Amino acid sequence: MTYGTVPRLFARSSVRITILVLIGIFFMMFLYSANQARMIHLQELGNDIAAKTQTQFGLNAQYSLEFDENCKLCTSKSSRKVHVVTNFFPMSVIAGRAKILPPGATWNSRVKPNRADAQRLVEERDRELLDVLQMNLNNNGILAIHIIYHDERVVKHIMSQRLRFTHKLIFHWVQSTNPTYEDALLYIGKYLLDQLVVFTNQDIYLDRGWDVLDHRKIKERKLMYALTRHGKEERYCKMRDDCARSAPYRGSHDAFAFVLTEMPKEKDLALLKHSNDQFGVENIMIFLFREKLKYEVINPCFVLYIYHVHCAGVFSKKRVRVNRYDTTGMANFIDQLYV
Image (cartoon, rainbow, N blue to C red; front, side):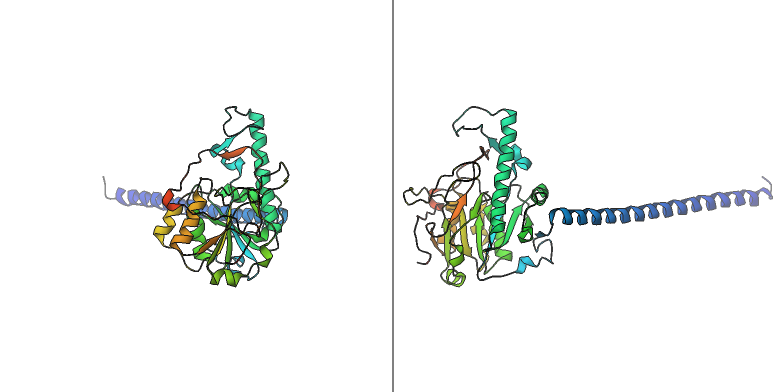
């Protein structure tokens, strides 16, 4: 190699490097521009979807304070209205965890529904639950309905139904696949202290009697109302009245009204690691409030009315009894609010 060839080789290498650097710079600029355009498109698309959803469904429900610090309804207080805390399991979302019975079948029946029956019963159960939710939303005595859920499809399902008064809805996500009584008490203890709360099953709606409650007296006397459900003619069937004057007390309770003033201890809450579809969990709830939290637990279901709606033959697949003899609380019917 002669001396004169070195500069030429070096020059060629420099050109190649310069070209490669320029290609790299242009490629990075292209990626940046494409990403910026994508982000703008997604933002516009999200805004468009949100606007359409709000216009179409009245999407003014909110997430809890844990996920939305601007939730105004979450911090609202009232001495006349109650906060309802519940869950919601659309059968169309969790049908795999449901036991479906054919029309007219009983729990002991071995007859399996055909596919058409099963689909119809799932849809019927969904309509029942939405009817109950709408009746509670219509209730002027309810300030807000807090729905504890795990599957985001629950929120989408509810908000796609054209329900009225959805501004009263607050959604709270929990890790439990099947939300438990413990999840509900943790939420109440964190966000609803000193407020009259009604913790209830998803197929229960509040009726008469709630407008006469003295919230201050309930708090001062540490009262808990563990209520047994009533039943009447509903959209699809006539429900049994479990709190009739002639009905025997069976230890069944479907709603709990109380004012929590402090968060229960972790070891006490651990008693309630059960979902509301398990037998006897309501009796553990009574035991906890009476024996651990020292509340006066009564059942004035002759005065405070709650109604149960479960006409469709769809039930939880795996129901087991979770209370024991040493964790069972009972509260027979009475007709007094204050004792």
